[in-house]
Length: 283
Length: 67
Image (cartoon, rainbow over all chains, first blue to last red; front, side, top):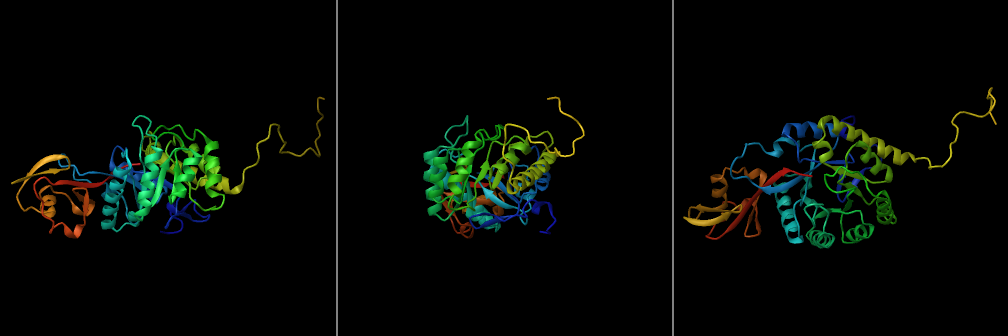
């Protein structure tokens, strides 16, 4: 990839390493919910990302339109991150992870050795089942997977998942597809502190809940290493343009984090000098 | 003919059909799929060798858009 390509922008800082993978962009995007595969392709291009999530599903035996998702993803640019979305117990999640690995192996995509683990507890909230998630995480780690683990924003759970060997812990900002942004920034702060205290490069990725570009920037400003989002681009009125906004929000948020924000203060501090004022004050 | 369960549906196939035969019959592009037979993954290089028997449960999956 040329150094000035969109995918490399925003990553001039230290590399974004997850397990054995090094990503050029800190934004990971989903491939679901687009009106057309062409719109998805154009949005992925505009996002600057070089890692996309994909789901494993039954081949349709009827009504196939002859188009495959993979015809619209440049496998030279994108590392695929297969997910276990739709699984409600650990056994199903392990089964789906293995099938995803099998497909990616035959595509010779580097993503064959990792998985986005998602074990849900409830179809209305799509919140993770913490007990089943932990069990599945352990089993997949034992099988040699690098597990990127979707979880709630509970700091204790995050610590447990890291201890179980997750390559990355991925707390939700808010429920999947809800667009509510980061509901509890303090929990995210605690997660970042706990997981990075003796391991500063351990990757924490905010996964789910992003509604718009500022949510992405806030995640990075808090210190997240990456953001994973799907619906906020796919269901925007103009997905391609929103994808570009997300790219810039990633760059802005990360740079702001590295630059060190000023502390919040209750009272004002003048930006123009007191010295040399020609006016008088009313008091 | 034998009866198997193919992606959750009851299907009739010729006796001694292999996984490769089934994929050809269903017009599935094997480059993009993975096959699970009775909960065990069938490696691609065994598609032509693996014969199906009555009662087998086979799942053929691919990648689709997801988050």
